[in-house]
Image (cartoon, rainbow, N blue to C red):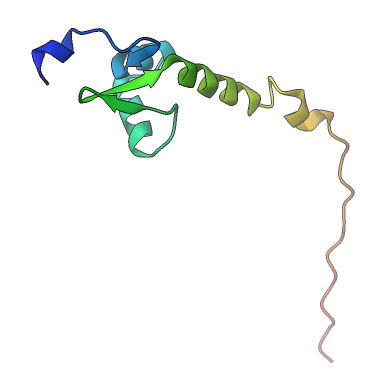
Length: 95
């Protein structure tokens, strides 16, 4: 990596991969694995380095919160009506 990009600030409203990992509370290697698997917040390359928009990180965290049944009452299985039990049809006995 060129020395000029190692200490240069990221574009406005963006974070370098290491800064994004710190913001999310994960290791940079975890964020790299997520990127390889196309998981986690959206990212792109800028001057040869991976950057994350701060808004993408916020959207990712908001999505995680919305998908969690502890913070989203609509997904809480304890608040749903129980589904009726339906018996499976028995196969006829061979004579």
